[in-house]
Image (cartoon, rainbow over the protein chains, first blue to last red):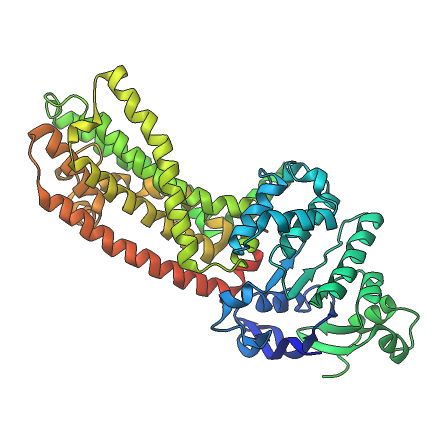
Length: 245
Length: 258
């Protein structure tokens, strides 16, 4: 499997504050990589750099073999992002929002794409509803549809199931598993839900204070740290001094 | 009660745009109305033979206001709806974002302007079309300056985030005293005149009054208006690109709306 995302020693400083201190990692095709870490560990900054919203102080990012710097627009056509902290325009209907983003991502067959995603994400009944009047679970599914409108090769997910009830959360996780398997895409999942990460991710990066302090698959990490589950590993690493670096 | 006072006090003291907003509104209002009062007190017969000059200038100014605010509104809408990040991760060049906003702002301004123009004739017996073919050039010049201000404010929003919003609402008022919308430039103190001559507004409104009152056309005014517009337009685009790069360094783009 080839690497769709290659991150090489990226650093990000905000003045004297070093938010990310030189991290490297890859995400393969058909892989979900978990990005864990306490608040302020540098996860959002890392995602921001992958989206081209933040310029790394140093280091390089390659998406699908193309260097992000100098090819931002071409790369943005191949990636997408979902976060509970960003929303779609509330006054537009679901279909209008998806149409707008279909146009922005220059999708040729927008109606077919919307139809396909609506069916997959159980949105058929909601297409003419006002986005701002939807429940959080419905909005989450609409945001996911927007994030998949361009058939991204790389999907960045920042707490994609935060504030969702267990049923909707489970639906979204199952959908992501199936979609990843079908389309062979790469997913970076930043989450504080350890059950979600254990279920979805074969590989995990643990960040703290801007560095990767540990990595591996969930089982390896649990065994290595002698804990019962990933949540206990997370707590141990969050409360201890940086282990690897 | 003290807690609520503190909540707003802390907010104000932590935001330079908010402090500026508090200070300049009263200053600008007093300055603008001071010049208008001064003009009417000393030139009581100036508008005697040209009914509708004030109304025509008001319509022209409103077009400028609508264009500028319209542009800002489009940008602010994305921040308010927390859609800003979605927009900036879409594969659009900065030039494409600006072009679409510029075109949309024009349509918004025209939607507001056309009914106002149509109403002035039956209500007040005045037609802005009295300005003739040069009306097109005056509107074009105002439109250019309006979107230039819009781009400058949007650059500020990119650079400083939503706290710059108050400036967005008041740029037009800040420039109004120097624009000489309702009075000729001679009414301003000499220092203010020097500043006013650096803005396209003074040439546009001087020319509108010239056409309506003297029934003559001074092409030089129109030329200077376009010249200054070109200068500010290029500067605003450069500043927008600069602000975008600063925002990419400071992380404003991912925190916008929070």
